[in-house]
Image 1 (tube, chains in turn purple, yellow, brown):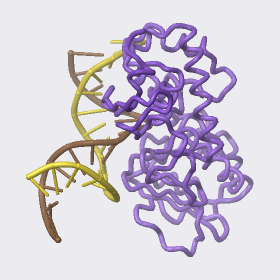
Image 2 (spheres, rainbow, N blue to C red; image 1 turned 180 degrees about the vertical axis):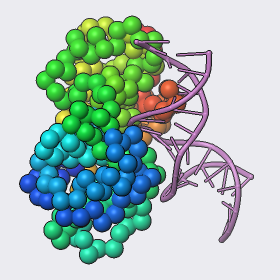
Image 3 (cartoon, rainbow, N blue to C red; image 1 turned 30 degrees about the vertical axis):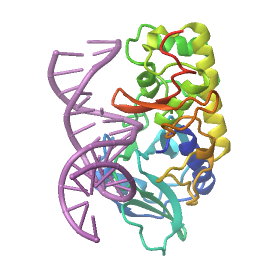
Image 4 (cartoon, rainbow, N blue to C red; image 1 turned 90 degrees about the vertical axis):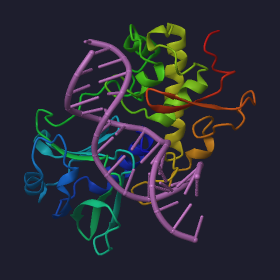
Length: 274
DNA sequence: ACCACATCCTGTTAGC
DNA sequence: TGCTAACAGGATGTGG
């Protein structure tokens, strides 16, 4: 499932491929993927055709294909979305919902579960979602994280997944960061001390940076814009490792459901109370 | 403002 | 072996 490192890996390639190039045609756009958009599907097609891409940006897990005048095509990969560059002559893979023709290539969005999203964002950011701080930005400090969590009764794990608080973490990296900082995921978010928040902020930056260095984590769906899987899955400590030994103490990794999402942790290294 | 819960969706896997 | 049911989860809408 694409989280910040996966989306950023795709962004880097798409930015180099699309910047300064024209969208010659919108060869396909499935209106079912257009959600919370400043323009309806037909108008998105009309507006996109012939535009020259300025650059491709990322905010949290969202991609913005930006044009002049501040307008942008908003893309989100949801759970199972892929964004790939393929020859325009190649047969569509199943569940292809968008095809932007640029020369003899197409930028294609493929998303079996259709949890992803295509939207138009106007000059004032209409159609964009309000997001919290980006954890790879300079402003993401332990003090800032502590301030964001203060007063919250919800489980820390759930708060880490709330994109309005921190933008970019998903289930994998939330579990990994909590493991590295040795914090129990079910703790109320507001119970975080300043020193714990500093350790957690460091761990979040670390897991995201390491994954980015490995071009993301691939379980089943994720591939980069050239169709290659990431390599980071072999570096995960707890996610998807239920009943396997903790890399630090060898106790069995536990899986519980927190806020409706599976959470993996070591009950020895991440105790409920100290 | 905050939080719990349901909803969307289909490929994969577990269970009978 | 073949069918059915459970499961995976990011963002959002609703209702408390």
